Length: 306
Image (cartoon, rainbow, N blue to C red; front, side):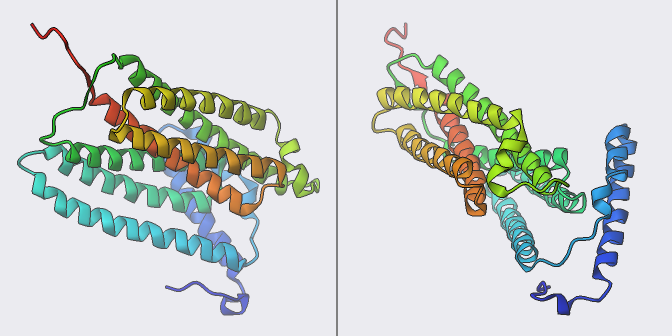
């Protein structure tokens, strides 16, 4: 299926048809939430009036969504291939097989959830769950890769005690995840302002968002401090090792992430910077998590084994 490039390629009643399909899909989702005991969430979907508002055809949004779904399909195919090849490790590391199958299932669920994100008109909490689930997928992939790579290899040995560094990186990952959640909430608040009844020029959108943007900005300072601290310790204790390479990459991505954040703040939220900001946040999370796995397998040299 190739999406249209002009409204003339759509049926005359495409708006009514799309809204009807959206309502039906959301009702099925609401019934699922009812069965899970999430009655309030289900009602919020049923009574969301924005879902009833038809959207005019937008070729840019249409093709962006098409490419997003296409990439999702390609990801699914690649994960199927990964599952097939994972059976090479069936006898020596069943965990790899289990994780590969698990990730395929999670990606399938993520694809379905993505369709719910669209049909619910980017409902706030669903967007957040969708983003967090993407991080889970990345984490499973990275863990599986690191586990397979480490089979039969001896752990790296360093002279210094690093248990506290492991804890520090773990805290940094947790803070980064919180920062990502805050970022999705800022994005949702910006959407609300941009679609509001009162006309607000783009340059003033962030001013109308409220405290959530301040929290997101302040949390960025904490992320910066933690990662600079981690980089200093990794550089000091892991010179010439893979952990240092990941630490260097982590520092570069962090600077790019901060740079795109500044562009968003001072240049009226340009769309390209929004996409890059999200991209760098996920890359930063991935590098932090991989660094944690590398440090986690590291042991401290014991000078008195007896």
